[in-house]
Amino acid sequence: MLTDTGLTLGAFLKDRRTRLDPAAFGLAGGRRRTPGLRREEVAARANISPTWYTWLEQGRGGAPSADVLDRIAAGLMLTEPEREHLFMLGLGRLPEPRYTAPTGVTPRLQRVLDTLSPSPAIIRTALWDVLAWNEAAAALLVDYALLPREERNVLRLLFSSPRAKVRQQNWESMARYVVGAFRADAARAGAGAKAGVKRLVDDLSRLSPDFAALWQDSDIARHNEGLKSILHPDAGLVEVEFSAFMVDGRPDLGMLVFNPVTNEAAERIRTLIGMRPKANG
Image (cartoon, rainbow, N blue to C red; front, side, top):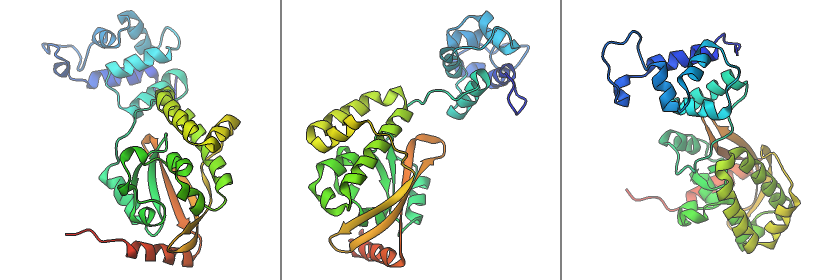
C-alpha cells in the first residue's frame, strides 16, 4: 500500500530494520552486508516465517493481519507513533487502542495546567481517574490532594458524594451527560480498559441507584464542551464553560478546562485561590 507520503510498507519495514543495532539484541555483529538486523532475525523476533516477512518487504503476499503487524512492531521495537504509521501503511487504518493505566503526568504537562489559572483544569484517564490538576481546580472543584488516590475519580465523586448533588446545579442532566461521555471514552480506550471499566461500573452501581439507572440507559455523549454551574459555599454560584481536549501523543489522557463565563466568575475563583493555605518553604 502506498500512502500520500509515497512511502510503502516494504520501504518502511526495511528502513526501521536497518536502523537497529544487532548488538543491542545479543546478536553477533561480524561482517554484515547491510546495516541493522537481517530479515530472518526480524522474522524470528516477530514469530513469523522469514518468507512471509521477506514478502512484506518486497510488497508481495497481500495485506498482513493486525496480529502480524503488532508482532512486527514489537520485533522492530517501534514507538507508538511508528506502530500507528505501520498500521496505516499495512491496513489503511489505525490500530485498535491499547490501554495501559497511566500513573501520572510529565512536569511539562503539569506546567501547562498551572498556566491556565484562574481556569480550573484537570487531566483525567479514560476511566476518569484524575491524575493532575491546577490550583484553581483544587479551589473551585475538589482538592484532590486531600483524597486517597483511589477516590480521585470524577464519577465516584459525582455519584457517591452528597456534597456533589448540593454543589452541582442541574445535577441530573450533568450526571446523565457525564455517564454518556464516560461510556464513549471507555469504548475508545480499547479492550485493555474493559476490566477497569467493569470494576468501576460494578462499584458505582452498588453505591448509587442513580448511576445504575443511567448506565442501563446506554446513552452515549461526546464530552467536548458545555456549561457547568457550581454552587460554592464560599464563592456562591460560579458559572464556567468546560472544554475537553485529548493530550497529544497520549490517547489515554484527556484534559478538561473550565473557563469562567464572566469576569466576576474569574474574580471569585481568584479569591478562592487566595484563601488557600500557602505551602511552606
